[in-house]
Length: 278
Image 1 (tube, helix red, strand yellow):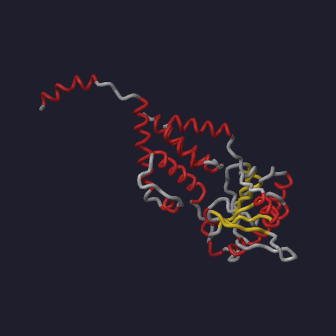
Image 2 (cartoon, one colour):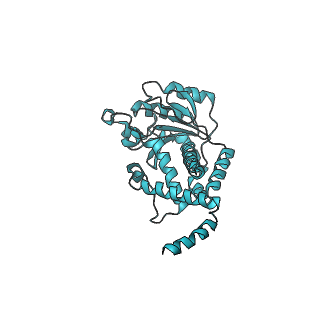
Image 3 (cartoon, one colour):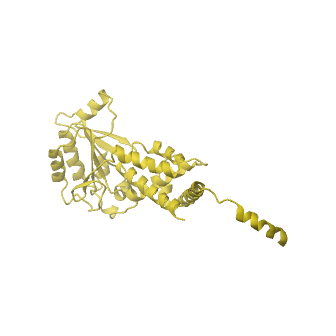
């Protein structure tokens, strides 16, 4: 046996090494598989919604890792003692408001764990014209769950056409997210609207000065800055350079929000460092 192994030694030395591209691919796939396997026992990941394949592809695992990174940045918080919250906030968030004639002043609908609230005029216009495009501008507010917040935002949307805002349905979601209220502008945001929002969001309504992605208008109030088409294209190219199969995950991530863009970039940077390390 010893002579047999000795005879193999020159042969082993003569064997060509694996191509660098194949070495990179093996390292990448190994690391993605290991990271995905760790998620299966993670409490936050297991709370995330969505169907999961029993035999996920590489791109599905990559997509799951991006979603988890997004959830970590956005939901892994507990800001305050929820027992101190205004008990009427969820009731008021889910209620329509009437004008002096008893007609609906505020239109409310539920979607994906949120209450969306807007003026009757905006709701009717969007329904009649079947408007379904993305918002032009978005303002994120890290606010306390107070009835006063709902009252002020209701008043704002009632005076501003093509503006909708959302707040969480469940108190746990209020306590975990760093943008408990999000305002969507379907027409270009004006300076007056910015100033109005800054004036409405008084210090007693703002929960924290946590930094969010975008331009800070005041403490706890941020104007989202969407990734440019070129930035998205550059990120897609980096993912393709890692492994073209991973690009399938991008289809599920569309449209790419500010938070998802940053989460995707964070995951890409991680795996770029994995394949670069010898």
